Image 1 (spheres, helix red, strand yellow):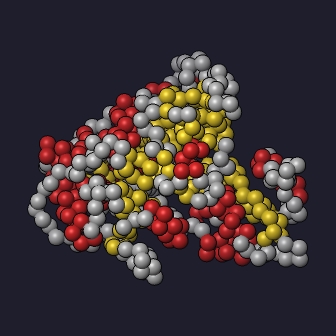
Image 2: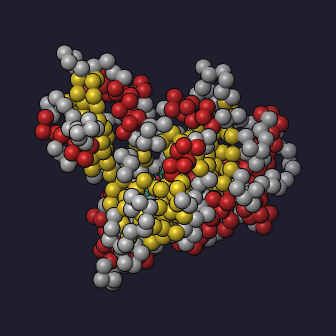
Image 3: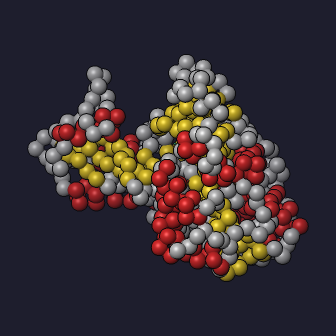
Length: 503
Ligand code: AMP
């Protein structure tokens, strides 16, 4: 089943319902959204030759056109490649090339102007109104719908292959475990639509409820509180950092959460103090999810009443957990030999179910590593309790999660190692109250050489996206290593390596 069928059916059933707001302005009814989608699909096909199975990349901030663009691709049976708008154009270029995108849509249409082999157009390019409404192309359940690029520990991004069936089951889990989508709700896109927020649009489409792209096209607490007052019934996905900022602003304004229906948080650790404060300010409006691109938004859930509960003898521990397995998946914590560990024992979190990716795009080695014996190996470490609640204890991958966005140390390390004065480097994340974690670089210089912090910072700016730059540098004589010569990042994290720090 084509995931775009839901938009088609909803628009035929309730054509005059509001579909899309930009800020407070109504941009499209469901009929207008359907017409725009069909027009856009016809344009992609006629002008750009897009056909079933072709990849179309979208490298843009959240825009009112996003839902229409995604659906126009699926209308043709094409595969969307939404690229994180915060990436450096060089990083986006890598993804565009790896996916073999036949077309790239950007806001200006000129991001890759000096790369004539990349076929790029502005996403708002005018298209001829055909007045013709056609149903979406027929596709197989396992046909690809979304290539979701996630960085690997090696620093090379990998394209997670998500099928129409994966997205359908993810949405069924949403309806079963996360929230009931209602026509009177407004699904707000405060977090990037290239990631979890965009993945969560489908239940709302099926229910015929409205979508709301903030006028700022990003996350702005003041704007969101204003929208809660004017539009009301806001539902949205937010990284823990965003929740923390929203609550701080709400407290300043004396806002009690009226107008917010559900805030779904996840994508990174939520500190106990922060969720306690959020509940005290807004009441039971929060649901936690734990997922990863490889099984999008669908590993576990801590439903609204369990987030807010204070009656169970272990409610405190439960609130700090990532909840219970979502309805469509089987969860297990496996030991190194692949056997399931009993409650209380820490191992790798593994998942089975119809939400799990079909593999990584053109990367059989990585697919075979992630998908073993019918399990998705998440690379996250944790344990279950007797009641099936999952506790995330650590990440076996060294990923740093800052503001809900993953930063892969190896990528930062490689950028800095290219600097002529840098001899050795180790990048880790350290806890930081606002962002969850921040990037810290431990650097050993080449003998007789050195570089200042501003120099290293501007070096990074030329190589990688700004949000991946280290926020703190420590210049050390040597890095702690084990007997095999491997850098002991665990020592750095626990402060042992800092003993030799010189700056
Ligand atoms: P991504 O594939 O970019 O969505 O990143 C997924 C990773 O984010 C997971 O493997 C976890 O390490 C982390 N993560 C996701 N949700 C949560 C959560 N609720 N609590 C803590 N970490 C999370």
